[in-house]
Amino acid sequence: MAESLCSSTRNPFTGAEAPAAGLKVDHVSKSYGSLQVLKDLSFEVQPGEIFVLMGPSGSGKSVLLRQIAGLESPTAGSVTVAGKDPTAEETREQVRLALVFQDGALFNSLSVYDNLALYPREHRSGSEREIKDKVMHALNILSLGETAPKFPSELSGGMRKRVAIARALVMEPQLLLYDEPTSELDPVMAATISEIIGTLRNEYKVTSLVVSHDRDLALSISDRVGIIMAGRLMSLGPPSDLKDPKDPKVADFLNPRIDVKNPRFKHIQTQDES
Ligand code: ADP
Ligand code: MG
Image 1 (tube, rainbow, N blue to C red):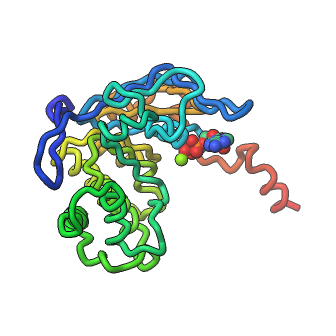
Image 2: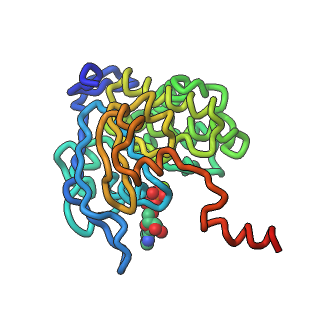
């Protein structure tokens, strides 16, 4: 792990170096009304690290990503990205952070090219010619050059996930947050996406926080894995810990046993038997 950690990122387009951004989640809790979703979570992601956060559906993973991306503020505790408050306007200019949404969040009415060009156009970063070079370069990194004129609806699920990553890359990120990047993909495409996440980190040293259910992804590319259940961090350690989890709840999550006699299935059994 230590070998790949790095104090600076390499810009995918200019090759320029910029400080890599780590992040710190410090005693974060988040409630919506009376529902407490995140419960006193603390961990750090080191610059250049791939940190995978696993946990059952509804455990608070996407909510946590929203606090880190600065889209919401925690009810208690704090998040810092490269030492700064991610909700502050000036942080957005100083620290380049990109979030790859679970559903890609692509604009269906725009071509793949225009989806990628949207951010640099809005931020007036360069002439149309420079933007074109950047967009095509990002698409080519993800082997998507030929999709530029197509619309999201014409692409497979795996391609849409890759377009969403290419769009994040156009933001020249120092920190990439991925929400379930391999969900709803077949195992081969899921492995391809895992490989892409690992390659982007190795090539550009971008700090990567990956929320995922995918044990293979965690085992193959992560430096460390955190497991969140019902809003609490249950374990934190190297991916090898996943093979022999100490906490029984974590073990059940990672290696679920299917038992049709489980009372959960009673309703179905009763119907069958009647
Ligand atoms: P996951 O781990 O599957 O990503 P989420 O982080 O999306 O889970 O959600 C965790 C819990 O927080 C769920 O019970 C969800 O209903 C609740 N929740 C998420 N966002 C909101 C919100 N804006 N208002 C109220 N409850 C929310
Ligand atoms: Mg989620």
